[in-house]
Image (cartoon, rainbow, N blue to C red; front, side, top):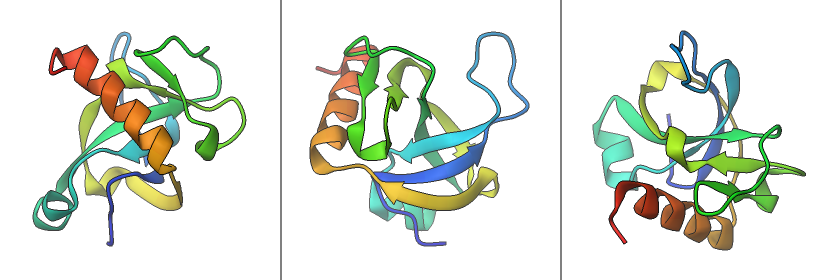
Length: 109
């Protein structure tokens, strides 16, 4: 499986609990490429077409499709077995915005 940072995949996020984002949906791979090759897990940010952009927590990602947003406060580590199919990649600009959102959520900026 060839996984790259910024790739968009269909990901099965079930089962989820409580307020965790759920169901099979697109998600962006955040993990650096070296770890994508070495590990059996990846860190992802789920995408949604239902949420409204609220930077930096929910970031518009026009390269992922109309009305698509990255829900940065729902980052999670998933096993590669949850990845179903690659459906695209974020633009460099969108990936920069998502990375900035995640950094702010985690207090790294």
